[in-house]
Length: 127
Image (tube, rainbow, N blue to C red; front, side, top):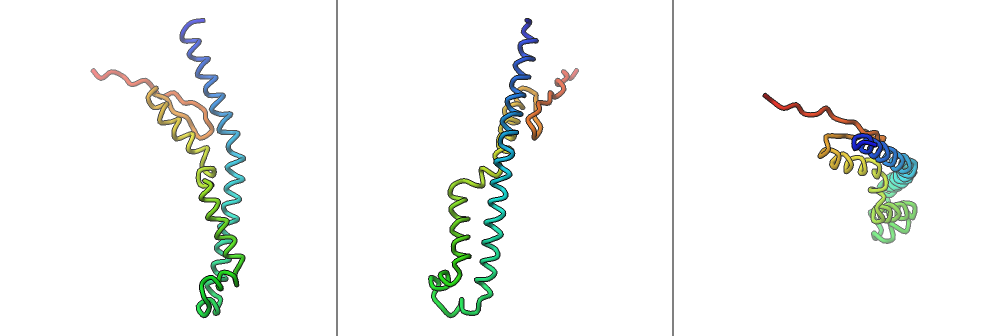
């Protein structure tokens, strides 16, 4: 096998692996997006109920939170999710694509959002 054939096989293997990694991350990222949207919606609904309650301004802050446990629990859950890194899990496939593109740029290549490699045209020497 020539050097060019070996290089071509290596590129094909790299592309298959990159595509596999991105494909495997997509369902997980979708699940985390659903969790994030659900908890955010619960927090927004709870916040609306908390803010529109006329007794909120009349009682202490802690008592107000005890009166609106739905809001307190959903806010706490949202904070814990962000502390655990849900924002990274939601965008994991795009982070991998972005970092791969940065590395591939040195080799005059690019990859799309699914992990398929794209060879850029060779730069021509200016005369």
